[in-house]
Length: 421
Ligand SMILES: *Cc1c(COP(=O)(O)O)cnc(C)c1O
Image 1 (tube, rainbow, N blue to C red):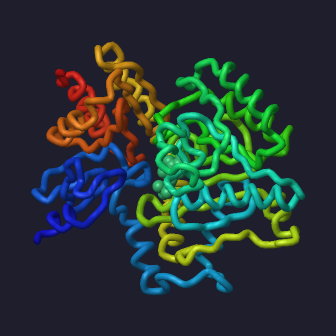
Image 2: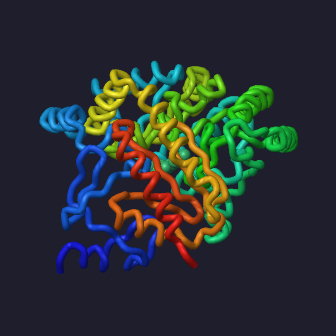
């Protein structure tokens, strides 16, 4: 069997059947913002590996950081042991977020699990029995069970898991559009808080852009109001910045658009520049002190690969590289190119809505049945995107060349134009 046949027989892919019901592209290597297939065909990468490869692939600085670390210490357990890489990374995260206490973990979903557990333990420590969360419709917070329980119930098909998923409280998502009026969603939010606050430990939200649940860019006013309500009712504000963090919306973290500080933040995806699986839950001194001074006195989590030195080394290198680069200027340039190019899709018959912010550009179609055909067209024409349903979108590395970015959007639009029933 060649390796593709083995894949077909034995290997699951994300949200797929086995064997895969959709075509899988055999990839041989990557370089900068390109993906090379087995037959050496080059694709411009319009996905940045699910929003993680913020500097592009095979960056010499990140490669060097990993190579150096592997000879020093690839991994060591974190229980009862400290190492410099974890400290240096945590201090960078503290300085960037203005928060205080860092929990390093394996993946975005796990960081959301840790955030939810932290919120419950915080409320417990204060003698409160608050076990529910408020989340937004169209939200996405990960694939593990607790993370899933705060995802949009329809999108993530809560019904499949019967009584296994805890039931949380969902509030109306703000309308699409950074400048759109969101007063109706704010009104529902307020009613939800008034009605349920006594049982609610935390409010979780993806700031400014709801990602995998619908690529919905919304007005930061919603976050300002949510912050106010959380403070009023002693509910922890959990900002899930796994997708938006490290510059994707033109700010280092999307909460900065609203000028608010969350009680808990989760980061992942871009944290290691797309090299290693790692995420973090970061919280305030008040939250960590409250838990640490409780009867239990400890935060009940501790994965085997917590603080993995290889992942820390590349995360440190990635953050420093970002800070030393003109990232904000780059992202704002990307934003204006997306805006200019997407505008050309506005009046197409199939198009419902276009929207963009930072390194993110989205075309929403009226019909969800074209996703695979549009993807095939783009691949044929040298562009890698992965639409879902009605959403044809691109999230690019900040190092992408202007011509390549224009080609991504133009190919997306050509693909849409070429679709015939
Ligand atoms: C991707 C994502 C997650 C889950 O991260 P994984 O690393 O895939 O587990 C959680 N929240 C948001 C907002 C995400 O975009």
